Length: 476
Image (cartoon, rainbow, N blue to C red; front, top):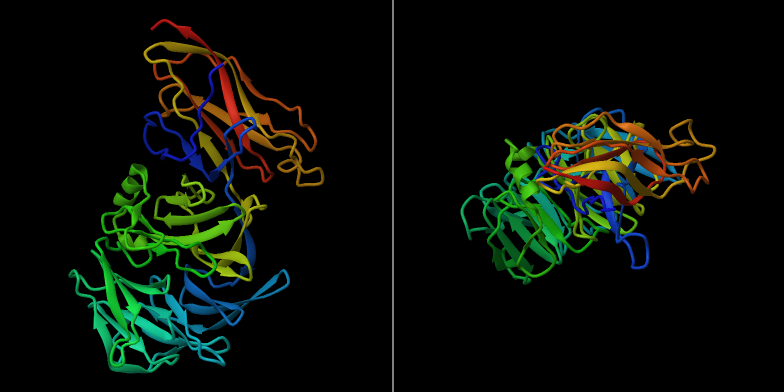
């Protein structure tokens, strides 16, 4: 009985599979030796609702400071506070502009200074009152801000980087440098690994604090010959995350920098093709998050979302219910949990590995196998068996989706273009550990063999360990 080969890393399901498979809202875990399989496939973590801010619109950015989470949702600055398991949202006032908002806070005490940059300028941010315009006229309109070694550092589109006074918001017009390694100006500055990374459209200039007595306090130490595609397509510098910086380069590939100045290309041809298909790079958003055993980076476009699992090195796709992409926007580690905003509804969520929905919507997991073929011969398939961890229904759960969970199985005999009508199979009520997931009399394939697809939306724990099928070879 040959194995049905499900992928460990996803390939897109938007064209004939060419022998590849797909993982949608499904991640791969590597198992220790001695078990039934080398890998398991299980659902990606869900999004549990924290609080509805009632401010419909996209979450554009945020920062954790003084024990609160400050978010920009639509054109409002929202304060999120947590007491036990209860989250509350307070509207602090207008924070205008469009596109990403970048925040930074310094070490002034008490309280620290907080600043933000939007598409229309810089703002002073407060935890108890409305934002105000950044009043120092010596600062040209910036397009991003970060904080390092006591200094606010602002990037200007023309390539200049301004430094504030130490733990202050005042700007000396002479305290700047200019990124000049390659033309094109700057999109973003980020503090990472105690150095300043200045991202332009065709290179990254790296600066270290050399305590210059006059002027700009940092000096350039390296130039990385890879640019940044758009300001929002980078993440990995957030506190409480891993030690990697990951971004979409100017060539529309994904790069990872763990240390030093030599980035590693981590995207596959499928991710590269998806990035090439984006008409407006400003539609791309990157974020990071963690859940038990997995450190993840995601790139979200208008018609796709790909998640890179740094723990395994595998990619999988992510989609919200009835959407071609994932609706998560921005992420931050807040009180030991990873919080994300939404693309349109103003709700704030937390990443929850034990929650099998996104808010109130289903989280639909799909697994698509590679082609199981004996080209150019045909195959008769009397039976197929799927090795799930079964019997995980919840006895007092919601009827029937938690008490009597099911999966839906279909197959394609033309390489993954058209699939049969799905049939359901039970995954087992609570304690039904002998439950079998089997399909009989699956018919005859053509020379392209068979591709299997499994869909599960019931919000219970489940894992696919392996699958096999009986085959009988037939003449061409």
